[in-house]
Image (cartoon, rainbow, N blue to C red; front, side, top):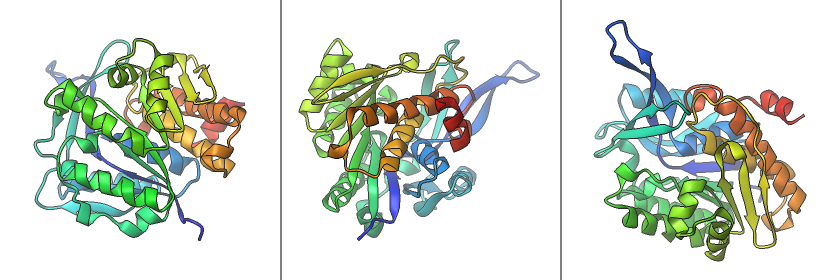
Length: 319
């Protein structure tokens, strides 16, 4: 039976309060931006024409309702987004330095995203998706950690491609060792993974990206993508490795850049309509090039979801 949903993602859906200048009195202003890595990725896939759906939890508050409306406006299915009266929507405050890099402070003790329970999962949706994607922020706290592990099991058993993007946010973990152990625990269960340059070294203990890619591949995935910022991405399989160069643009805000890249990559994979092990090396690199184009467009605007380009913009950049 053909699967009806192209990508289902589970994880955090939150407000990124992003620096937005100063008020008349000299006080710093923050702009309410919808965010969360899995939602950023789904927005890319939705813009590229694919059917997407989100699994997670927000509070029944002004922010949660805003986030649900935002997903709906982006064409992302929200039937499995739970709106909970008992918890508040997770908030992240984002400072941006002169190079566009970010520092995070979270209001998440607990945040609604950490309170998703395994028994609340939509099992039919998980069994009916081509790709199931998750990140590591849903591994920081129970009950969301158990829910994430169960979702990976259900989707994997039903034949979905399992996609993983470990995001290290130091303030959300008791210490780096606990974070690394939890993030590494999921790698043997995934088919493809995207990781940032810094996180690849953190997870493997290696000092260069090619060695880090080898270690990650040895843990189980068929394909690893290590994002290298403006330099593009290192794509690695057991057969080959290559740095696919990025586009040189003026970055305003790198929020969502990695998510946008991976959304572009997975959209390219879906377009090919092949199994992972059927992809040629040229096809893999073309998927990475599309990811780079999406990310380059994304970083030229502020905010996560609002900065994600439309399909026509991506196609124009790829010409």
